[in-house]
Length: 190
Image 1 (cartoon, one colour):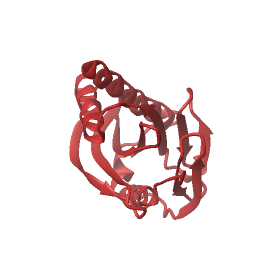
Image 2 (cartoon, one colour):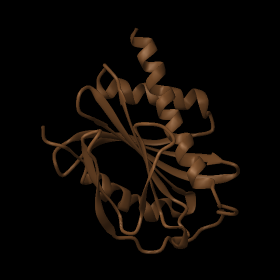
Image 3 (cartoon, one colour):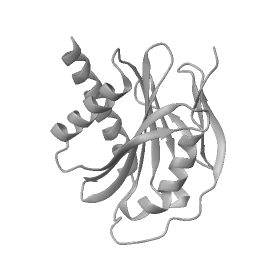
């Protein structure tokens, strides 16, 4: 049973990465080379009442419903030229957060062998929610991507993954913004 749960968790993590990359690559023609991302500021708070969490999002970014229940996409405005997004997924997983993270990393290694895990560390929010941060480098349709996955224990035995995807050339510019957004992650009080 534990193996089945790990496989399911891994597949969900993979779906999140694919959804983020798919949204990201819409309209992206050539993202090679180095560049600087336009300055970004923290914006409003996004609240998922159905999943019981909230966090701030970048100013001007827009929330869109995901292709399936439990998935939310927050995308950079087209005019910013960033072609970046934050995809949140919530799913039930009976194991620990560490087991969930490991299952997702294993699924990633199997399904996306060219993806490289750059770092893997504990992540603590301002609300003292203990999470996990996995930073990776990926490539889709010859576009270099910088991705960071933030994992949290949600309410009622659920796990929350927020995957932030940016063009590789903007990764170092947007990393602090994504960290700032996820530092505000909080569970709704019950």
